[in-house]
Every structure is written in structure tokens, then in C-alpha cells.
Image (cartoon, rainbow, N blue to C red; front, side, top):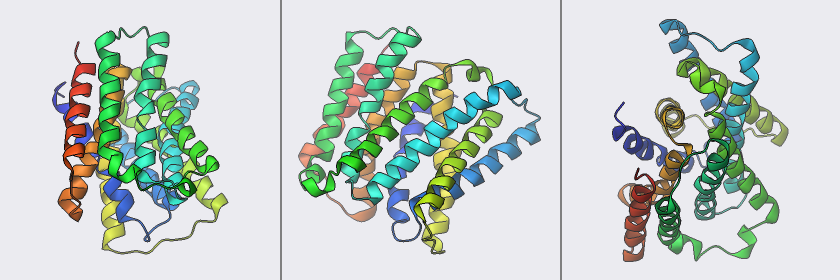
Length: 286
């Protein structure tokens, strides 16, 4: 896939996660929804791997794949959904997510010797500031009651989990077939979210067009396309330069909300979008 097309497609697809989360509100418990998503995605990738005759990882490599999936899929998404469903503002969660490319860059530079110049760090700070400007109207309405220390801790844990899960993709599992690896990783995500839903006593599941449509897109769009592109790009290139793409997710989600739900974008938000885009382009400059 083109080095230009993959990042664009990833950001466009990944940003729809906010729309999916909005669609299932009141229709399904977050843990149950994610568990169903990961089970179906496991079956999808498992079927693709068997149909293509793909080589499965050696058994001694399975724990690494499962840990990567548990972190990248289960803990990250499960923790983020749980935090928002327990009062954390989606805007605050999106702002905390800007820590992920920073953490990834710091660790990747140490572990993998990824060369990151001053322009990268300047672009990263500009991108994070741009995200803050886009989220400013929503952050202004957040009260102290929505910033529970326990909920914030879970949100930060989810950010650390996606950082670790992304970096593991650069280890020995990078040589594994993508479809078989994705099947194992999503199975681990299903296990984490399923256990969490069971322990939390989640039961909300209201079948309907909105729920089935959201689940279908979560499997075919967010997982089959979005997550796969993320893993593929990290395997092929710099983990730090791939991670900065998430800075464009909140601005694009704001644009989607404006188009789908009639929310207005202020000049400050439009300026923040431009700043985030400029920062990401600067980060990805070779």
C-alpha cells in the first residue's frame, strides 16, 4: 500500500471511533460491545489466515502476540470506553490520548534507535496544541466532578497500554503474517474485555439498526482496516512517526460531528485543526 495512502486512510477510519461510541450509547454496555467486536474480528482474521494458507506464529511466540493484543485492543479500548462511561469527558480522554505519541517517541528512540530530529519534537508539540484548541470548547464545560482520580487513572492506563502494545509490534512478531497475528491479538482483546464485562456485571444489549450497524463498522472498519493499518505501518516504519497520526483523530472527529450532528466549528477549532495537521506533517518529514 502507498506510503501516502495508508496514513490518510488510517486517520479517516480511526476517527470514526468517536461516532461508534456515540452510536452505542444506551444500546450496549462498552465491555460487551468490545468483546463482541473482538470475537467477530478474531473469526474474520482467522478465516482469512486459513483461507490464504498463512503461516501461524510458533507456539513460543503466542504469548507475545497475546500480550500485544491484550494491551492494544483490550486494555486501551476497554479502559477508554470504561472511563468515558463513568463520567470522563470524551474531550478529556481525547486530550490525554495526545500523550501516546509522546510516550511512543521517547521509548522508540531509546529501544529502537529511531532518529527523531528537532523538527519532530516541534511538530509534536504543535500538533498537541492544535488538538487542545479543537477540544477547547468541550474542555471549558468540564467540571471537577468529571475528573475523578480513579477514572483518570484508568484513562492514563489505557494510554500507557496502547503505547506498549504499539511498541511490541516492532519486536520479533513483526515478521509474522499479519492476518494470523491479528487473529491472536483480537482473541486476547476479546478475553480482556469479556472478563471485564463479566466482573462489572454488564448486561445492556438492545438489538437494533444502530447497534448492528455500529458493530459491523467496528469490525470491518475500525478493526479490519484501522487496527490493521496501524500495525502494518508500525511494522514497516517508525513507531514514533506512525503514532503522531492519532493527533489528527480528534480534529477529524469534530468535523464528522459537525457534518453528522450539526455541531458548529468555531474559528478557534478550525485553526487548531490546521495547527494539528501542520504539526503532524512536520513530524513525518524525513
